[in-house]
Image (cartoon, rainbow, N blue to C red; front, top):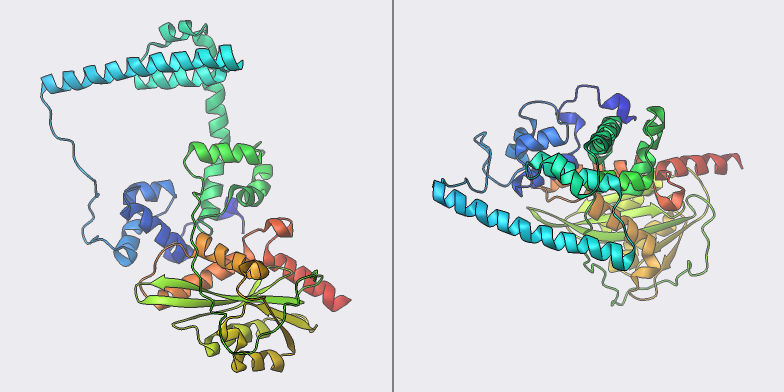
Length: 409
């Protein structure tokens, strides 16, 4: 799956994931972009594609194809306009004086001198705004107009050379809208090399920052485990254990997700070696029978026959007779945290966090719609998302390779 080849192909509605559609709808309804701007910003094909998504998934009334704006500027008299402009000039003069003092402080007290390219950029921006005459302004900073025009030419050449980067980033962001810059760089690096584009990881960070395309951090935490019950608990077998092979240790956890129909629960089973999600189940309740379904999916997707340790928290679902019987039938040894300590099941908690904060970002209308989003998200997580802990490989890559090696051993 290469961005360079996929971008040129005509897309249909089916080519966009539900998660990407919900992300675009959320941006438009928050007023961050109009639907036409969103269409252009993300390179979405079709004149009314985004409008179709808004009508299907949006929470506002999009029955009419109108551009929503917060307010329209009221007409002002000539005297009011002059007064407003005079105030703006006064404010600009005050800012200019303060900025001038700041530059002198940087030079005299901290030994920091502004580079010519930064000055050239600032002067060019001022020229484009029409606030200064380039010749007069450049003399104030001992620069020639020729130097500024040379900088501009170099900047335009580099901008043109980096133009394909935006398309590469948009391609991967449609699958993983909250993917960090380090992982994003790893994904687009082959295309950068192929097209002869010189851009490092830090350069990509600055490039995305300038275009307001960095991922903004989000925090969320809710306790879903009840470990105070009478059911039998098991000791923690992973305290001093180093996982050495694929499907040697499975970690399980339950997290909540919401739709307009209410709160639902997502049970996950992950291979500790490859970080691959091997089984999952979305349900209305946290019943043991629902959690067992995620384990059943895991058993069906196994590729090795070695002994397995199953690690979880002390939640009632995992301690229940039904779940413990399922472990015994499949030859798995139970292992549990000591009380409620999320750090003793950190990997499972981490996988939960990745799914919720990078993929399951937007509220679905129905549970069935949410089920589709979960299925897409797990597939993208397993097949496309690189992990730092895996040497920037995907869980599927590591799992498949390790399984083959196990079978040959």
